[in-house]
Image 1: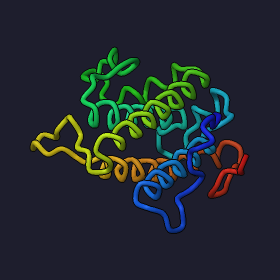
Image 2: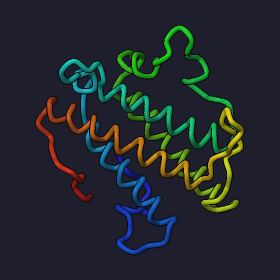
Image 3: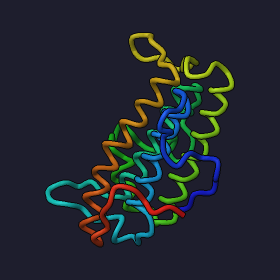
Length: 184
């Protein structure tokens, strides 16, 4: 998996403003997740640990779904695009986890990378149109609309949780351990 945008913060600033701190934290989580999942073949992306059925491929596809849901769906009110729009969510509620085994590593990496790039662009658009206080267009069941600030915090939490899962799975695949990916 590659990093093409050099302007993306490597980590949160030590004493930055709120936007740079939130974006830096999210990017650090994304980068660490990408490192934990990167460079593996189909067998590596399908490996499990213990009784769990969670795989790195499933995590890639799940986090691509979460990125699309939060930034395209919730923040901008857009309908799901491919591949989410063709999934039978009623028949297979955890479709992204199960269907990942049918995808090649190249498809999984591209799906996640493309979705993250789209989320970055949508975040920049939202920041230019209301900043962190910009409200999502799609409301929750109770009618509340989260701010971009809340969406970023939710995404940091989602990545932190799943990067921990990825860390354990990756160590079982090839022994890769560590907290931070090597700098380019």
